[in-house]
Image (cartoon, rainbow, N blue to C red; front, side):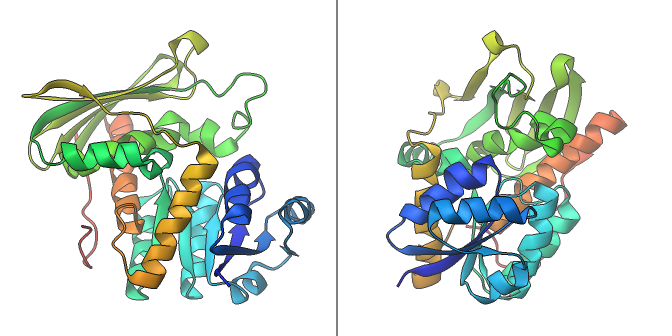
Length: 308
């Protein structure tokens, strides 16, 4: 029997990505579903051939790991609960909406030696991982990144998400861009950010080795202005980072594989909770800069085993 997973969440992403991938995975058992709306949990459980739970603690008692597809603030609360119960964690980005909460979660997971994976979709495609491994061997002067999404069109399943409307592209699509930049350019030490039309956020980042990043993100781009472009620059000229070649379900299956490898083999995981915390700290500094109109430092992680 494979590792027993509980799924927390009943929204579109939980149904179409987490639930579908867990139900199909040969080495995972989807043992139960919990959601804030029990009626939706029952529908999802029936679709996936598993059990709906009214009490999250009862679900945690019956599983080895949890996959969480909830708004970031709710995710952080439930992830901390699961970690305290000794359960391995497959999390969504961002792991939390504040560095202090991400720190609590990171310390809990690391102190209990639990496995953790944060699902940055593009990071679970082999072509992206291979590119980043090769790019990390070179020296770069910076990156230019644009992620203009347009989710407020009719029929988009994410357009009514309250947290996305409140926090915008910085917190929703910003993590995707940072997830492919930080491993190449290194940690961010300081950030400056400005807001623009259509809730765009324009962010400059200084990295530990001196590289500078330029980012622009929004969830409300005009449909004709949608873009995902991340390009490194240096002595090699401009080099684009490829888009992932896996769809969400296949990529999430790869995330399950990597959590299983941690649990069974102690494999190192580049997208673990410590990396998730690094992303949150960068986003929070950018958010502070939007209000302060000043360059803001990025807080360092509390002590522990450094991320590889």
